[in-house]
Image: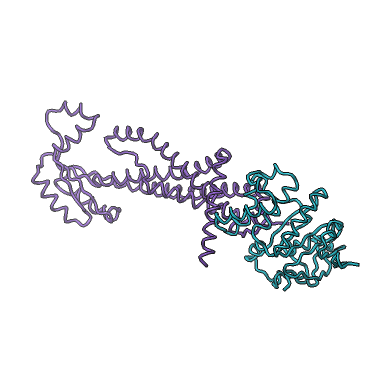
Length: 227
Length: 309
């Protein structure tokens, strides 16, 4: 079954410039896919359409077999709660503790308190931040902040994890560490889509890569089978 | 709604209730000015209504003290007074008649501080028998009272008829007009409270815009995002109303002794009446209603503008 499917998807920016030009591809459930391309290639737009942060101008975006264009507004929150989102700028609540940040997706979906504590600690353990539970994000390094963002994305046990340039501001060593985290999450059974401009780092992980250029798909390959 | 969903909504309400209260408790001084404005805006109509209620009680008291006083000729005695009472009780406009003897009247005068010295200087009681006639409620209009007053004046036993109904009717009309004015001012000040709370919530939404966007990104629905702001509005309304109740109590406490003094100077035992627990609860209820409504309208309008991009 396809976790994500794009059928001739077009996205125009308000000014009329093309973000995505008739994009078609599919990602099967449990697959890990990197979306590569230079800045402005349409990587972020693609992920935003899946998370319904933006809507397609034409074509169909299908998630778990549902056309997102037909999703009623009242189901929008439920759709987003079913997706784990990781951002380049982390988007953390800077005045709250690491624990509070990671627990947010569970609080908004009404998970019981005892369950929240257990799952937040498990998520922090997965990203090696158990010892920073009471720290505020301001006191953490960029890499640690990103790991908090990843813990927040995975705490709700999403079937689909989307990451937009998660290593954008990190040095190569930390970038590799973060990418490895996504690979580990994929091993646990999640469908993972990671947008990154760092093609060299992506190729080392030997997963499927979709390459975008000016809103069009110009390549779709797996490094281990690529020519 | 399934049990699980119901529990999730209850937890969400609990989270919103305590997080908004916690935000309030963390920075009470930040909200002090807003609370003061709400308290004054609620206290003004509440105080006006409390004073109006007192004037109405005073008016009702005056009306009950005897709508018509019929003074008999001095030479007439108790037998005549009692016979006339029996006769007048048959009149449909009359509800009750109290016969006051000259001795009763003298005692009443003596009880008044200003008259006691003058009365002690008199050898004989100069006061006549008086029939204090209470009119039926429906008979207190000129249409019903005029024939009765005419009849009383025409009686051979009558020395004088004292009828206070005209100025009481004017007082009632004035009270009714003032009451309407207070309601209009109350509605306007209620609107001001609504706007003050709405604007406070709007500013809070602007300050917490990033947080709202993050919440929406991780799956918070409109209700979850709106709830803490509506609860904030409820706290503003509740604490503002508590402040208003305190101001009301202070104002009435300050006015009370002066009113008592004034009433005593006129021989009345009238005391300034304070709103009871029901009145205070009503004030708190109005505060909560205005707070939640202002917050709901502001959050409904401004939360839609805080969408993830």
